[in-house]
Length: 132
Image (cartoon, rainbow, N blue to C red; front, top):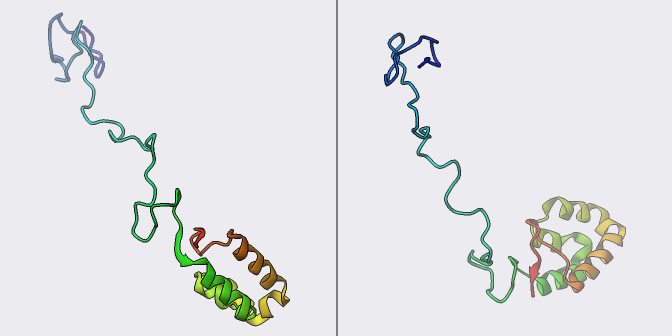
């Protein structure tokens, strides 16, 4: 049997190489693999995903939502939207400052925000829709 490490010929039945001492593969025995699993035993995605596992998400929604109220954001936008107060409320500080200095992007951004909040497609700073 030839050693794969040093190339020396060893007698049949030897378990270790006579030259380098490396273990020799044995005939008719399966190769030895690392006993550690390559991946976690838990699947990455379940067939039935669990939603709303974090506190603050009502169980009736099939997806995570923001703990912030949509109607509060709508009232803030409608009455003081030109100052960007609704943007500060949902955590969008950068656009809130922009609205503050440009009067709601000259009224166009304010109008778009009123419509998107009323339709329910306005999101908070983490991209989650506002709760009703």
